[in-house]
Image 1 (cartoon, one colour):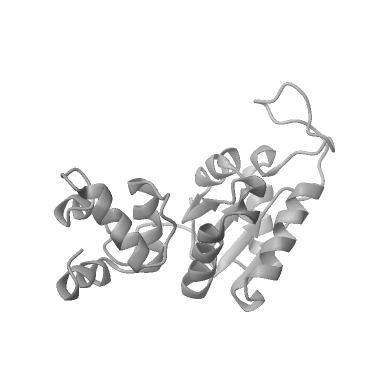
Image 2 (cartoon, helix red, strand yellow):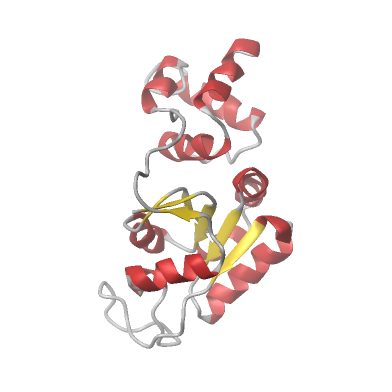
Length: 197
């Protein structure tokens, strides 16, 4: 596994699945063209960009470039790195036929090609121990603060998401991933010391 400091943006869940087997880091999907109409998610990307930096890794087809260009024009370029995969003809194993343009997407790329693309983009990577240098926010922390597993947890999560200007549709697991990308465990608990949710 390679530890990646920046948040990696991919198009869909199969891309995320492939990449999560190669890197230790935060990977978030645009849900394809869904990003065009999801202002909350775009604001989340902006916040993550300013906090950790973004790496955009989309397919090399026309749709991938439309999504990449949308993000490029919507987020300050000083916070974005672009990783490009090569044009390789073929089809992914899970599909019955090739894509419209007949090219492999991120999900069909080898480990070596994906790592090379990330490194060429200047992504901050390190081999070896992928453990965090700080203690992460955990599911137990969400339970302890009343954000999961208790009566009224959904309302408390929604209030916290509003306070942090995060998308209201984040599941508890997705929220946990985003919180760990935005803050330390200590900063998380400080949210409840000053203004209980």
